[in-house]
Length: 152
Image (cartoon, rainbow, N blue to C red; front, side, top):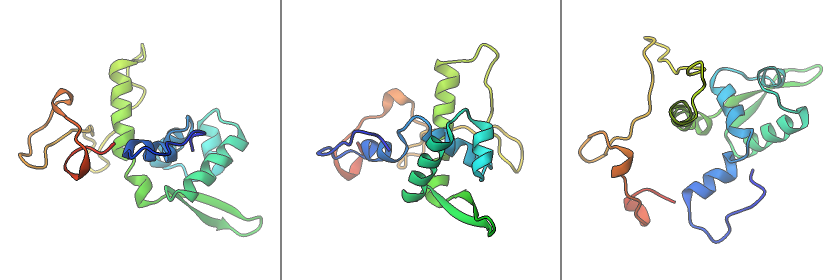
């Protein structure tokens, strides 16, 4: 969770950042989407301090992005599984990945690709108009107040 809140702002983006806007949070979700479920698994995949990981996992559970599931009684051990709310962050991760590959590229090329598990095809995010079903380029999106356009 961010250390500053957005009190007084009616903004969907600000509310989302309250849940996933901290530096490590989306990286933890990235690993969960990739199948990591155990505390040590997250530690092995990321250079994150144990206390920071514990805090971020607890926050993601509290916010309903992950659920904590007991997998061992003695001593008690838990897995962290994505909820539907957490899985709904997949397009956000893919969009950030594509943006990073395009605007902050690695000299050796993209470090990962997103593939469709069923056929192996590359998965991309696209903006499509609900009305005409046409793909919409970023420069053709306008933000409007209220329920008729993009929120905050």
